Amino acid sequence: MIELYFVHDQQESPAPRVQFLEMSGFRVSTFESGAELLAALSDHRPDLVLMDVLLPGAHGFDVCRLVRHQYPPEELPVILSSDLYRTRAYRDEAALCGAQDYLIRPLDPAHLVDAITRAVDTARGAVTHTSPTRT
Image (cartoon, rainbow, N blue to C red):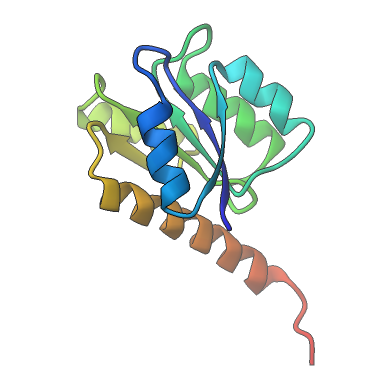
């Protein structure tokens, strides 16, 4: 089961997205700020972080950069999402800060599941390829 940390923007209830993700087979922990996420990451690393860009306190791009100081992309994929920042410049900024994907809301549920699964599979593949082979 894929475990993900979901950092939401508090503008709308995270309950529908959390419920959908859990029904899709993911284990979800929610956080209301980048500071909460960073504190949780000091204790435990999930398989993926799904984070809104517009957060209280620190911006999602800045939080992603801080996550990258702790974990490289192959150890902890980050997917950023936004309903406000829709231009190519923001997608490019997400890539520069170390995010694996940038999704525009409203999200197509199937696309969200695919993006999460692809990012985790890619990260796990990177770890698998660097691990010693057992015979």
